[in-house]
Image 1 (cartoon, helix red, strand yellow):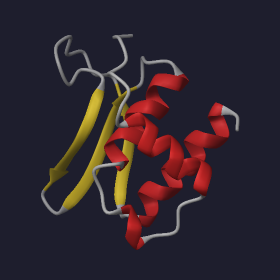
Image 2 (cartoon, rainbow, N blue to C red; image 1 turned 45 degrees about the vertical axis):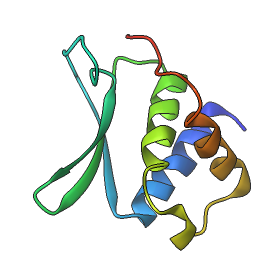
Image 3 (cartoon, rainbow, N blue to C red; image 1 turned 120 degrees about the vertical axis):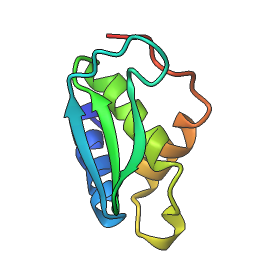
Image 4 (cartoon, helix red, strand yellow; image 1 turned 180 degrees about the vertical axis):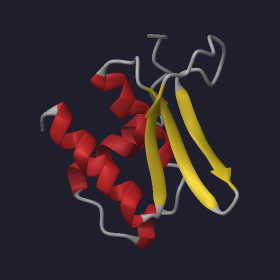
Length: 95
């Protein structure tokens, strides 16, 4: 599966979970500078550093989605496998 297709599938999983995904200019150099999940008021969000390459953005999105209850929604097997594998991968290096 191409990385662009995988990213689209991951974003669809986020939509099903009512999680807003955004790609921002994160200037923070320390931990969390690559992205992560949070809650803003009643909205669940995943914010990812847009300066990262496509693969790292997909990896961060998958890792953060893995923190949500995926058993409640339909997730394609290949996408579910990528999410599960991303939990074991170390955080990508900075941009």
